[in-house]
Image 1: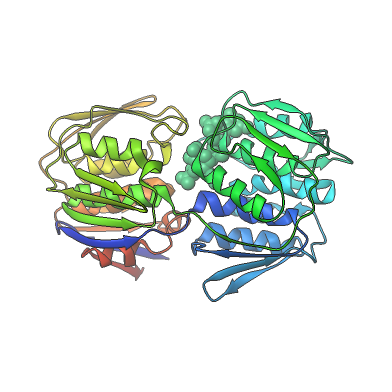
Image 2: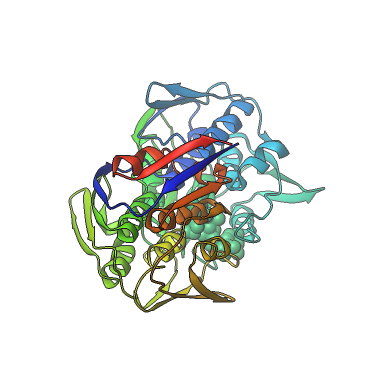
Length: 418
Ligand code: EPZ
């Protein structure tokens, strides 16, 4: 096992090109199944979740692998539609393969994705959408058995704008006869990136990024090349790191409009932020103030994935900031670890109140989940002394090279074997 060690208290300064978006490339890798041919993905981040998706594609009979910095997939040889339990357990978001496999083969089988660190992760909206398209789904002994001799496009209204359910419905609708109109779709930018990829492959999808997405199914598809959009949550993480430690950073490749609620919170806390074409700059003296109340919500609201890292940035601020986590039931697991570093945080159900303290202290801590682990990186950079972060496999699911990125900004940080 390995861990990350940080000597905190140093100002950060420099420029970073932001990695490709995990939450865009995962549905796109599932979408490659819709075309029995070759896909080239550029700007794809080297993440453990991406490697898990590659293993699923290979299990299905596809060819998938890196050719230099490009991830190349050929689903021509695809020969099966089942995902075994051990591959589902590696990455619960593998449920995103369901709609694409159904569209390609007319059947699919996978183990019921369990919950995760964030709490139960129901998929009822995914299954309801697929049933409305004509799929027959049943659960036997923890396995989800799906059949769809033929799917027919129709109007579908999601009861809440679930990102995964939106993506699964779009991918399944690409295999359905006629038009599907999806109402109350999630509006996250990653869904617009998925639409761009699907259209590059010959599919007919429009409206992604708005609440209404239209798909004209069963189009002829062709090989495609696509560059994955930048990761707005990784960008939020690095902005939070510089806000916490003090210094200045220019993030390149990221669309500042995708982060407006995060930059608004950091600006309220006292950071100077400017956004331009493909770039965001932040300057902080490290002495922040309260950001008021931060409520997570579906896009374009404040992203739940940025809650932990922005919380970590505010631990030494003057005053108190209130966080209200409206998306997941159990997304404050990082709080106990931050308390070990001297943070003053009180939690009651979905509300966390962060009262700024004069200083944080380096400590031995453990990542509890992907974004909670990223919050420990942010806090360790602002803390006096040495912070040692264990269970960093959580962090490696979503960050390609956090140690290299932060070291490039002047952090004293290293990845070490236990
Ligand atoms: C995606 O998860 C992201 N993952 C998450 O990022 C992100 O936090 C989340 O969207 C919200 O933005 C990927 O894209 C791979 P949801 P997803 O369906 O699709 C409930 C990270 O850190 N719900 O929008 O699972 C659900 O319980 C990860 O990168 C149902 O009730 O999120 C949750 O409370 C974490 N029934 C809410 O909706 C369903 O069928 C939002 O979930 C589906 C969801």
